[in-house]
Length: 183
Image (cartoon, rainbow, N blue to C red):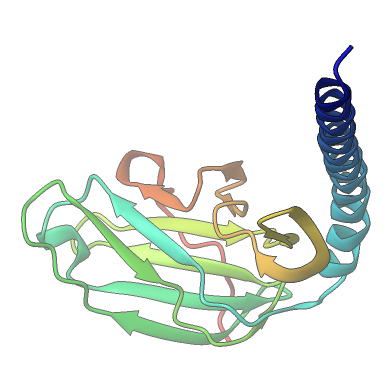
């Protein structure tokens, strides 16, 4: 066999082994990072959900209302069955039967608090928003999980009138009476 051919085959074999080693290392690292991300997500979510305050202003969507019905939307902050704060918003609806997206107008409240939303003029509808939760948002880079996280509010994970509704307040699902006591 030719000396040059033998040398080229050795160089090619070393190159193939080197590439196979890099691919194996990358796949092994990706697998262990994925496993670490799954375990970290559970443990970090417990840490995040131990927070007692909601400092974000979650969004809600009012769906299926006419222009007249949502000229005034009133938000009550309820703690231990009593209203401690309320705010009135005047949303603008361009076309009938569109939806309006607005934020809950309280800067800070406890996770155990309930937000009561009152809509309507002649036919009032009421909604109770409760069970706000935080989750761990894991940070990822180009090579996968980085090992760090942020605590974020689950904006669609709260309950509306006792049911999950992804932050949507449907006209037909509102109750016809207010659930709070006076201040």
